[in-house]
Image 1 (cartoon, rainbow, N blue to C red):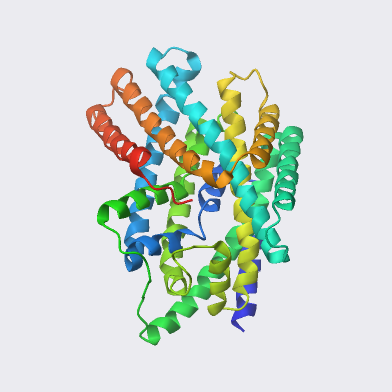
Image 2 (spheres, helix red, strand yellow):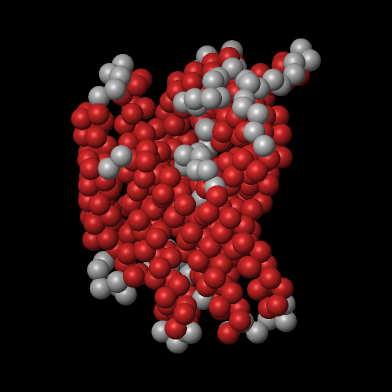
Length: 406
């Protein structure tokens, strides 16, 4: 009976997600790109990652990570409102352009790597459940085909076409997430009634090592910065509002997911975390959940890759001052991703991409300080500079010492 109920819940949620008032809303469309990138990059793995580091303190850890991510997002939002006008009009302090250019180059490389990495994971996942095992050539071929599909969609239909891909994949993913949380809630209620206690078999590390790993896990919830590069379609006010919404929705889902998944996470190997093991373990709650989560895992990687393609394409367009169209930039980004798929060890370079995201955020803090010092006349500008410096200091530590979680 529970399996039937979960399918019904997922179906109802999916229908609601495609309601015209939502699907035709400009505000919701602008929310999808950052939301896809944030949720897609680590929704299923964050609970076991945290459990492998801090055990039953995972809810506190994920809450701290979400709060810090929101604080970093506030720096990006400040720059959307206050730095962009000077950057676009070429009337700002010279240091602004140097910082922004370096930050954009860093982020472009990280985005291309992330697109290749996410879709490679998707292909590996497909082959695993199709029973083909480890087939590198087939995996790379499937990954390339998916990237070509995204590239053609972006080239022919532009941002609107890619947003539709995000909408379809995210709607299906979120409907399954609602069913997952419902199924886990029932399982956890029975677990509590049986007076079960959480027990995790994880390595005993000193607090410095734990902090370094948690710094790497922070980068699992990155993706909100994609709103920064949607200026050709949405106003600054819309992007600020929808970035906030995407961070609040994803933050709530991450916290709820970690709390709900912990009783399940006890049953997987925390020394060698595999998405397939997480998916199979959810069968303890309901036999329908593994099948549903296979779809969700595929959609999460696909939506994250599409979102990062959007971010990278719009970023390249901005750096070229619009001389190359967004559509052509999406195609160029996809070609670079295909090149990485066939030539690079993605498991090695993704660690550099993770640090690149942190470095980008750090440079955005530097940009915010410059803007606040030279142009922002708000009475709390001194507090703003102290705030940006504080967030930047944390990010500097992450760049230097974090142990990447992906």
